[in-house]
Image (cartoon, rainbow, N blue to C red):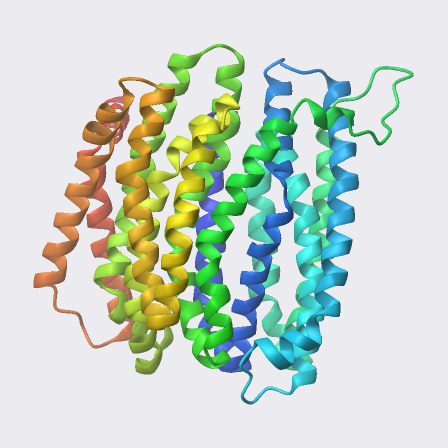
Length: 500
């Protein structure tokens, strides 16, 4: 199946999942209240911190599966690696869930600033979060294996079904059973069980059959050959969690749970920028790994540049729209002027930061495909020691706004300082072409278009009309970026000529 179809399938599913997750938030707040929604934000933050235990193993199975497709390893090695990783993942999930259950009372009483919810509800919700996080953790292993087989279309369909069940069908629980937080998280626990079973079944159907008389037993030996790569990914993932989640952890302690809900809402909407770039990375990394395994470095770089332009158009257009029209967009979405006033300043900063993050992530994909993350390790060590104190200090001094400025600063510095260093080492001569021909024209075109719209646009009073107008403006901003992109212009011209 073609790379473009993989990307398209991933984008369709991710756009649906993102939109349904965002659109449904006002409904959650209506049924559960802002304070209970703060618990959902706390759960999302806990799930991210749980990735510290990943040890780089989920990306490793994805890469090794892709290498199997490229002929670099055999079926016995792949199956033994999966068995070793299963034992580790199931063990870590169990230990992590038990630890979180034991800490649930302390979290409910001493960490979260609960004002109205019964402590028994908060404690029970945290206990259910432990089970859900453990299940999602195990599911991540099998997602990695399925993605390595380049089954993005199948994963996309599953994501749509699970998102509908997770975000929309829960409304039936609110209507029929109750709106307490434990009702919400009990239902999510059930959905987590179903999703994990489906992923396990699919992954084993894709795995190659073993030669006769070969058995797959638990052994750490298969991990030895990939341990260096896994630990590199683990360290960079840990730094990523520290940089992106420290603000959320600190704010969960210092903000009342109801106020934390507004912060969570703003970050969720800004996360749409990351979601838009996520599908292409999921399809890009296995394909780049396969191209390098086949010795096709030129094809890998060409794919890398084309994907960069595509993400620049999609992600930066969305980031600019969220930044320029944060307040009217939030007001049209939630129908609450209080919510839009509280969340808009945070949304602007996080959206712009995520725009630079989507572009700055590309050198990592190149390193991942080559199996050499040394430069990524060095860069992340430096930024870890420089940025974590800035994030913590800004959050403690200025709250959510300080966290937003620290996030934007971190990603701008990374993009302009570290990305050129990585490019110069891995692909000499690439960076200036990448920056000046692939990225800069798109950023300039989309920024100018968005600023012109911000200055001259007069929005209607109707909430639905505001959504329609902003959608139309967003489309124009994206089209301006596409017109500035050499690859997308060429693609559009080719399609036009084929139809004429």
